[in-house]
View 1 (cartoon, helix red, strand yellow):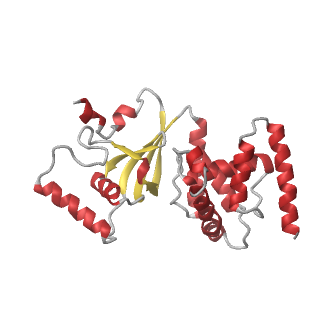
View 2: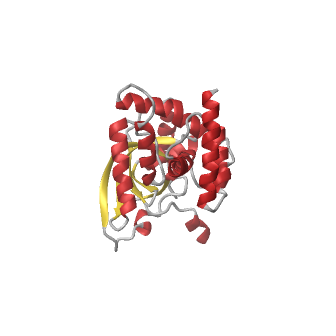
View 3: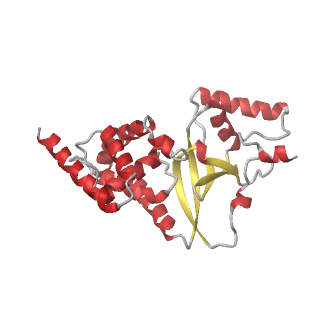
Length: 261
């Protein structure tokens, strides 16, 4: 019995602390990472960790599951699932079979309508949730799914100040395709994924860029992605802030010289 319980998908009601006051926000339609979909709202005790039903191996269930699998393999369009977002994880309200199909096929992202629960006493997360909505509304980018929503302020600054004479949304698209995605790819292939094994490249990007924002007032775009990652890893290992700032002053001079050449 214990072994079976360890394989059951977590229940939202068990994780949710009903004694606390919450702000409930309508997150709207988003693209979310399937790896952050951890449990269920209304199918408690009925699903395994791959969102397949326990004890339901009848023909009707098999037919429903296979139809969704085949449809996704053929790029058929399905309605978005409905989820609750709580403490960085998603719990499925509607669409359990679609989630099961994504997990079985290795599909990383899925459309979802999100209802977010944020503890009223957590001002940072409330601000983060509001910043995410502002970022998505102003840029039109709804396919970046950060675990910690305060990181959207970093994304917003990057997209808003990306060098371009285009409008806000076009500038954001250029930032996304020319800067954000290549940087995340470089992070994915770097040693940073071992340093932060529980975070996706997008979340690590926020840490790296936020670090440069703190110590240099922004990311030096003249430097390559590999240089930025190496500089971050070296200086992040220096515990004394004055020493970090000293290294960044040297780095700024070197980058300026490269730019002049």
